[in-house]
Image (cartoon, rainbow, N blue to C red; front, side, top):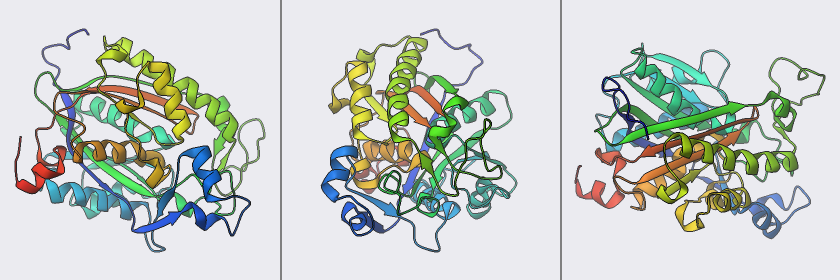
Length: 348
């Protein structure tokens, strides 16, 4: 890997927090309203249950709770944060931005704030954008939130989508890390030709070309599956090469949690066993932009992800979009350490 210029700071994650709603929705809940059963859902997707936000909870609410989880572990986590990015496809409103609503509630009024809309790719997209803001001198530290209340925008009687999606949020602060740690490279892309495979209407009734959209999430599952298998493998391979790495250098693959069969196909493409990835979609389903921080935080808290390990992020989403990134993990602050060390008050 080519060494960065001496003046370029090492940037990575310096704080992390997550939140999932209390309400658990098992597969069996769908049996009464559609032609399916719990076993069929799990066999096709790997999902057993998901979480739904309370009726009065929306995306800004779950995003704020993820930030507060981070602050409970590290009260200094938001120091010097002067920009907020919220990755979401279920914003509270088109304006004000959900990022601004979150910033207002966590003491960051006055920080730059904007939403990022690439669906399930959004959180990793946000990490790359945050890095760019800091390298450009526009921000010192950036809070990136991936938050969704997808249960509000999914037709719960549509078998193509209802069984897949859940609600949740993750929050991370991007800032300086010691030499040898942090982000290495990112690959990002999108292809609007695939827009009709995963969509949600906002203002226009149709996509360019006349494809009619509905008022809830629509998806061509077969096309999305084929796209995901291809782009996760391609983008992951490309970013590893760009970083001067090979699959053998990777300690953990951190994938978007859409379907366990997609994750298995990607791992096979990399020549890595499933023991080198983390899967939690069985408990949370597809939380779109929140999946990557949720699965990352789980690996950190239970001690699987350790200081100095090499991570590979891969995700795909609406757009159709894709993103991959490499990072050397730094565990030097309280919210980035295993739960047992946090409980004991041990810091890096």
